[in-house]
Length: 230
Image (cartoon, rainbow, N blue to C red):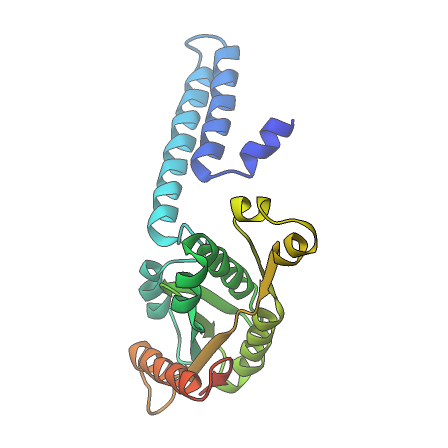
């Protein structure tokens, strides 16, 4: 049962293989050459085929590192928007310096942490990894003012989530006593800057709203970072 539960929590192709194998067992249990055996085998092939298609879609449209929809999925979502929406651009502050100082593995952990917060943004926002340390959030059916409290809550949640960096194992092994204890872990603050814009009489297309949100993001950076700007 534990193994089955682990499979069911796995990727689509793993779950598809599990269910198709189960159906094949049912087919073998049925009378050879019977109609039910044929139906079972056809069902097994269909399940496996659908799981492969789902896995291919996930690989193409979902960012592997963060689990968020990727930039490739972004245009389809923009095209489906109605006449009322807001778009926010989110950028991790000083990420390049942070990445250079602490290494790419720690940088990836930061990206996953921020993505986890973005994936739980309230207000109906849908988050995407736009590229590098930049993310986008679409609020379909929401105005800029309606999205603002949720973006402020997101910014605050990320800033309050202190990120712990562990020292290198070999470096730690050479340290003793209080010195070793004090250098074992280092907590760093990760912050984000956010720019948001909405569709209105001036910005009438998703592309224009996106560009306006990007300009608002740079205003947030120039104003000192760790803030939301319109």
